[in-house]
Image 1: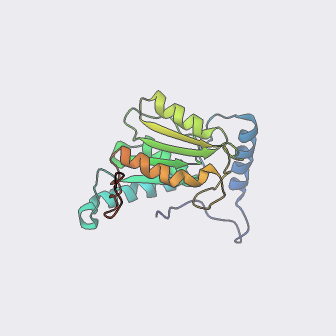
Image 2: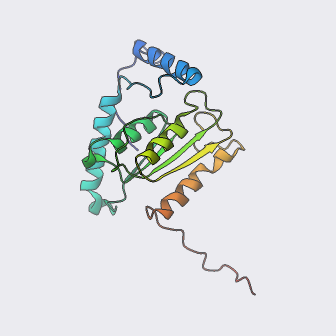
Image 3: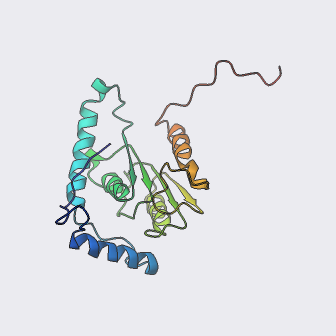
Length: 199
């Protein structure tokens, strides 16, 4: 779990800074019009990227101590966190993750040929970034980088692990399967006492 910096909130816990209100206006307009194609950088994004890059360095430096393969370090981001994951994936090669999960996140370009493989998931009824899963997938594939897209019929923005009775409920299992197919995670062990088919 990465706790990263952003800009300061307003005068109280319920006061959104003016810059965030303007950014949300662009997000809502973009959702309706498709313009601009790529969301401009958010005010707090540079600090978030610095913190993400530092986290990647720390995890890799301490990988042997923590029993982690330093070549299988990924970033899974949701919404604003998916922007951060995409920024790291297309940014400085030294701090790139080995894979990314971009869950209802937004487009970030240019995607270099050296970007890591991406698992991309979103919902067609997304109110803030309805086109971004397809845009992300297209950008990754155009760069010749492995990507998998899951665009669910329903789920909205923020489906994460809350069961809603929709196909988006299964995104995590699909992510694990994708990771296993790329040898980024171990396959589950077969049950020792499972019955044989011919018994």
